[in-house]
Length: 294
Image (cartoon, rainbow, N blue to C red; front, side, top):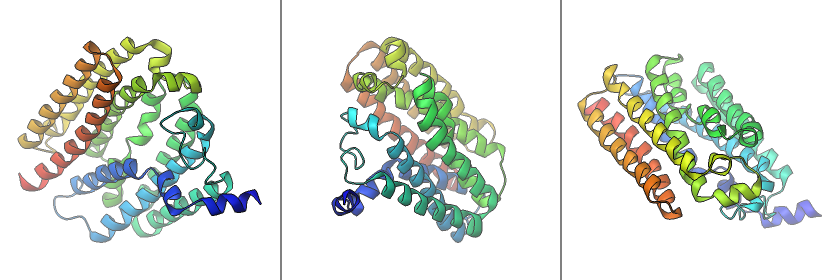
């Protein structure tokens, strides 16, 4: 009877929300750029479509697993307490079935319509995010997002390998850029939601080491990010147009990071968080534009 009531409450929007569509969209953007950076010409249309569809479905399954594992924590946090699972609109059983359906569908597409290398790398990324990070690291160490960020940094490599079937240095550079971007991106949000993380028992860096230490870490990782973002130019993956964009965008990120350090407050933290999303999207668009137009 309870399952029937839950089924009646749930709508397609609840399942869509559990896939974290905005996060997946950013991942697909970086995957698309990885695909185009792998070849001098056009990416085969079947790889472009099926590759990104499979990657998006598996990424969505990872997000659904994140909702399932974090459902009790989500209930304690204002940002997440209205999600479908904490509110009881979707049950655990339905969530597991949904994750299996989209995850296996994505893996099937990648295995049979793209290539095994891309499929297994995508599966590794899924396991790293859904189980290693969400299930363990998130609750084990304040460096959770640094270690676990590797799983979320994989989409450019997934896109690249979808085209070539190989792991190449250029793809690894793109992964390293996102890997360095992830800590300052999430720590800015963690500062804004510090009290909620403390209440839920998640050892995010602002909770365990304080805001000032976290802000210094943000500045440090932003510096590393700026250096890594210049690497495509120095290994001749891209030209001066990209390098100029990367340095301007990096200067903006450093400005927000410094502003967060000298002007504490939730508004500054959220502005830094929002800029970080714009930064990553524009950086990868700049890579794509430079690759084809200059």
